[in-house]
Image (cartoon, rainbow, N blue to C red):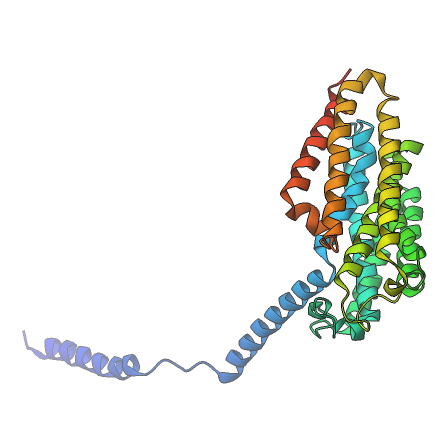
Length: 336
């Protein structure tokens, strides 16, 4: 058989290899520079959005949300937290108060941004530091206020009314009451009372007069202690509160003593009206009184400017809070 067929096959194989070799040797096509730029821009945009969100959350002062746990006071004191739907409505009230309080913090920081910029501590607030624009803060504040009131109305119309009252009190404080001696303390104390009232309204639990008196006097005690600590520190006159120069250490001491005394009398009176739970509630009087005394001593040392931080930082206050809570809840859920 002639060798031509094999030669043809070999020739074909050689030709095929020659045709394929240049193709295999070609470099990979380079990525288009526009596609890389678009991808980098998208990543930068996502990072910027997350940074803005983080700054906005910080401007909402999440550390202050611990104050809104007062909404749990009424259902816990009534022993109703385990009733059907009560825990869910109380949690909803907590979220509502967090949204509304954050809205007021944003509005307040927008108003005080120039003064905060020269304050040794407040200058780090996002709006004062220029990390969050005034426009973005106002839009976020309005959105939080509207959504918070809408959620409150879904839970119960009464909660929406209390939420609106809370907004009215806190906003009027930012614009007017903060400049009026005594009225500034009462306005902030009213905010604490409205938080506790919100928990009762949301869960449909009646608040006794003893509960209202202890809450109101305790709130006045905390706010007066804050003013005392601020006056004790005495920052530069142009940086301090407008009303602070019109307070005196002696007057604030009397306010502290009066508020603590009324709160103690009301708590003891309430405890002795519960004979079936007297052992637990009677024992809870001891850490309650010691807590007030400890807090007053810290305030006298000028350490009560931030109540929510002081309570979590001081081990004695934490221990007394824990002991009181266990005894009180023992009276509610265990005592007979």
